[in-house]
Image 1: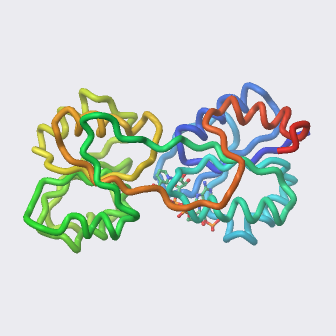
Image 2 (image 1 turned 30 degrees about the vertical axis):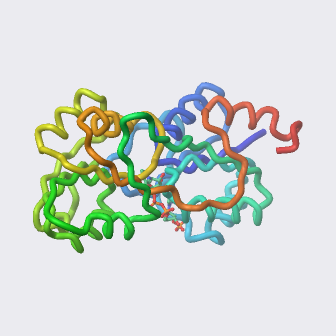
Length: 249
Ligand code: NAP
């Protein structure tokens, strides 16, 4: 009988939890604990880090986990690397449920950068109205470019005010739609959007809005991850659970 640990914090993980609840059997969803009130889930939830590769490998063994599904965000690089190593160490089957990255289409004005630091550097120059479509953990780095007016959108009200001298904060957890994001960008006179190449549909609307308004985007490319088995749909994880062993994956 399978015993599944899903590393979550994404809409994909929540979609998988619904399928696993309907399927029955043992499955737990793990959150890092970054969001104050995560969505209610139809399977049991645990919260908090495991303590690195070693901690996760111990957890897998102690809880008799047979299958580890990494459905974390594509930018959760440390967790994903730990998952590969811990699954290997504990002899547990492993798969990643992840979204394909976004690709530019006609009308997009993207500048690709490698990481947050490169995005900060790309904002050097005169004052502009910038939408920082990034989590609260990352925005403080932009204090190095204090000349801009920043529009921030967070899931929760932060414990401490963001360390940016000129900013406006919107608290909203999405998913976002094109009309809403068009209105938001127009209302704040946004001249450039900074975001991570998360992929998926929940956060895509800002790209459509930027395209429609001719606003350039500084696109932070994905971090490198170790080689692993990857699927893009929650249904494919069920197929792997039921038939992966026969297929040798
Ligand atoms: P990260 O830098 O890769 O992970 C840092 C540490 O947080 C990990 O080493 C692990 O601690 C703990 N951790 C991360 N995800 C966890 C999970 N699902 N369950 C238990 N512990 C977890 O990750 P991050 O970028 O901070 O992301 C944290 C969470 O937010 C993830 O659940 C991710 O899916 C979600 N998220 C991230 C982003 C993003 O842009 N990075 C966006 C949306 C949602 P230990 O080493 O102690 O085990």
